[in-house]
Image (cartoon, rainbow, N blue to C red; front, side, top):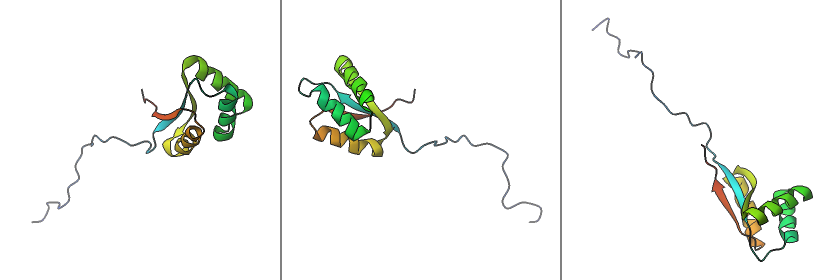
Length: 101
């Protein structure tokens, strides 16, 4: 059988989803409570999250008035140890996956 290609090329385009990132963007949420002082929350944000004193104060005020606040954004593996350190200090914190839309 001559003249018949054994591996013909197809002239079509496949519909393929492209994975842009393997890491989801997350937020580290700190929750308001009636137990911890502003000073303790501010100190924690400075020491654990690397915030400046002013940034930590602003975050603490938002946490107090809004009930919660995303104090840090990043991938899960980066935020998880921070979340653990914050909760180890008696402050409520969670990690939430940020919506893509």
